[in-house]
Length: 152
Image 1 (cartoon, rainbow, N blue to C red):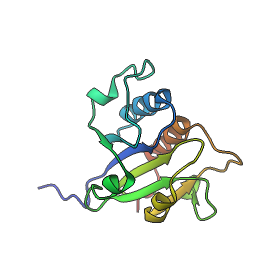
Image 2: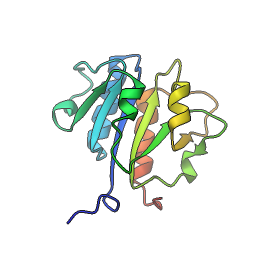
Image 3: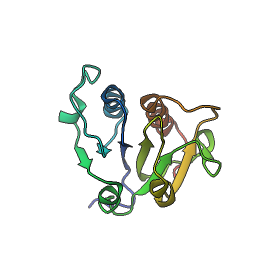
Image 4: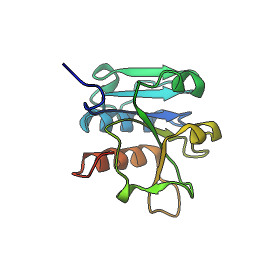
């Protein structure tokens, strides 16, 4: 029997993504690095040339019209991890990824909404003065998750 509180899984998505190309790159990385599912909040995914693996047909893809819709449908027991340049955020290098979590990235120009930041169980950031491209940021988070680090 599977114990959902021991089994690891993670999803990753973007709130109000600005450019569809970024979604395609992130989905390709998510599929390659073991994401259980991908999602968008606000703006929808459209097929992109940069998603050469056609990730949206290979792993579950969900779309939510609003943050509230997304938040009300988080998997039971999953922790919401926001990726945001915020003074309260933990440096990714020392962050212990939860066994079951959902990574949420914001649009490059506005980041995560205030409501999203308030609802996140954790915030993580990079040791970077300026923001990174959203697909690059998400790819780095997923790579870091795959490192042999303790889980919370």
